[in-house]
Image 1 (tube, rainbow, N blue to C red):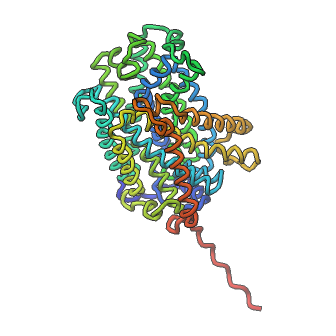
Image 2: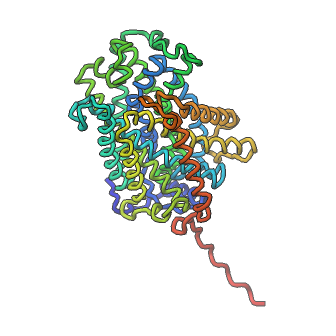
Image 3: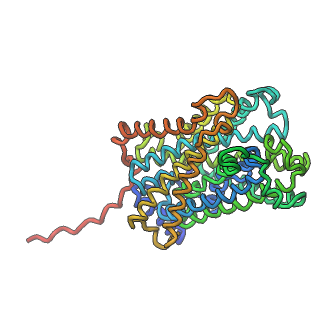
Length: 528
């Protein structure tokens, strides 16, 4: 078993040739290799699928989908998958050509120039911090249902008990993630891979167990709307768009498989495959869990479906003992999801700092010689994630608000990659890497759909719905418009700082800049 204290012997033969090729690709982008390449194909796949995290997302927001769309909200799952698949296919071409840390930032920079790149990286980095907090909140949805002793704040019946306890549990999880990520990518990858293995086994077992308890057919489930949307201008379609947040929350973060490109072997080949495998596996397994849960629950109209969610279905259908085993697997999934989100944020912050695109760039981009990972970004992202939780400690609607804002910002960051990429396709200046993943003639229509999907879903998720942004009284306009206000401040405030201050300092820091080998000395000229 290898250790992280120092580099081992250099690989020989074909492995050495591949490593040199990977590093050459990095050098073409202007960076010298600094991060240790230790991750294989399964590690990159595990990073992508743990960020998506089937069990985390489905168990965290199943209640939301049922509450606002009824059982028929299930149709939002394939809808979101098709849209995100278009984005993922565009990302696969980029991952094959630019297998570099901080994937979204570097892709946006390569496609749209330094200003678009900075904005895309800033939005993604901020969203990652919010996502870290949002995912950490999922402990509250699961742990107290396993055992009431996990409700440390009050007894759960108070107005703010759940929100305050969620902050406490989430803070503990983020501190754990900070420590693991600071100790190096190998430790994170080992825990993450083990967690993903447990998650996948548990997910398949859960599908089988739920299928064995089916009490109704899919035609009943997939057409039951609970009568939601009646009397509204858009009818059920409006309710369905609100409920689609539950599916949109799950299927993103697949770019993480490429964000670890500088620490992976043969990333140009492995990253595109890992992106697609992670997304497709999540769609199939997650879709079956949701479908069989709705077909197996004893009472399809039980109010607990829209309050306690999928946890209730598992416990009431499979019994307390078996149900709690699956819920512990959900806790494992949440844990590795937080690890993956944190790891992706670290690489993004490192990538931007390496270009001196953040304050104190040289400090943030410093790679620990002992752990061979950027330690300072791990601490900074963890600290900000905890702060986001703490300032929302008495907000009972903390779950839907933080989740919604995190999703929208990531969709916008993706849009800052796919839109400039579409412009380059239309101008004929985009060329995929030779011999690697390519969409060929399908690239243009896929890219168009990806941009339209990203723009439409961002608007849908940010729409000022009271049930999402101001679910409890009193009603305030600034809460209803919270997504536009918060994201506007982050985007315009951040870009203003960049434009007037940081952009005058940008450029690859000397200690991270690629240095070409000295050319061989020329023979002296002959004397005349």
